[in-house]
Length: 364
Ligand code: SF4
Ligand code: SF4
Image (cartoon, rainbow, N blue to C red):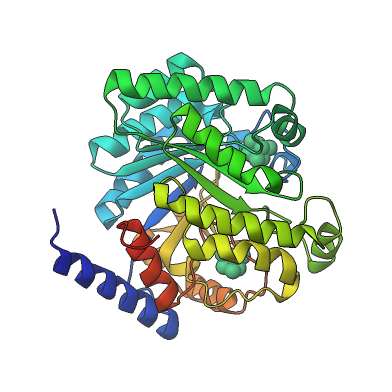
């Protein structure tokens, strides 16, 4: 267990490493999390998502053996936090469970992000036995009709059933797994954000994490598409913004329970994000230093901005320090996409320090 001084020292060291990395455009740090999008396949057709519209190249996906080797290389490199996402991650159920088991055997934190579609009781048990650190399930409405409108008929009942199974298995296995709902905030469900929080508590889940909708989660479309999207019912406009502000303030109060993952700043920025649209101030985005994303085919991609490298192009440390990555980090500095994604972090001492205090329960 670290002492308070060590903890403060680590925070300051990390902040200055980020500061220097960003300003000198050189990575003095390793990513704090590596995410594997292990497939683009998905049985759902969520209205908030464009990933399922891609044509998945199944034969080109990294094999289990390749992924295992990559995981071991990450560990050697010093990464101790990985996550597995999709498409629908559990399309590759057996592979994912084996990868989580390998990661936990190497003392790495391994999170699973899923729609819950394939999470039957047996799979939940296998995941807990593999020592998954967190299971994050999408929940887009407190009401069945809201969630199912976004994610497809029958999905709400499946998610609730799965949540109940997970809570009882967590107790039975005496597991430390964190059970979390993730909600994509849109014009269709923002009125239910407090009810989603209450539902999460009633079900015995540990956390809820709100993620404002991004017009294009494939990062392939131009600003014209964004402008049309702002006029759609997915966006929150007009008088609804005042209601969202009031809801955000209530959520800030509910943060005292310790069950809302978002920082206070994130919650308060949500109405601004919807209000300002293209003018939303992105600030200094450090995603190019803090986070590494690997797509199903081994390509390293940061929000569609490059670096067009593949994990098979060489040693991961060399790729991270490469010229191509450097160019991508320049592009990130110029990124003007309105953005409040959960992987996005601003280089802002006040925001990061407040988030650090909140994480320790010293600020709510
Ligand atoms: S949001 Fe997830 S579950 Fe829904 S269609 Fe996209 S990849 Fe599939
Ligand atoms: S601001 Fe950062 S995280 Fe957001 S889209 Fe741009 S590069 Fe990506």
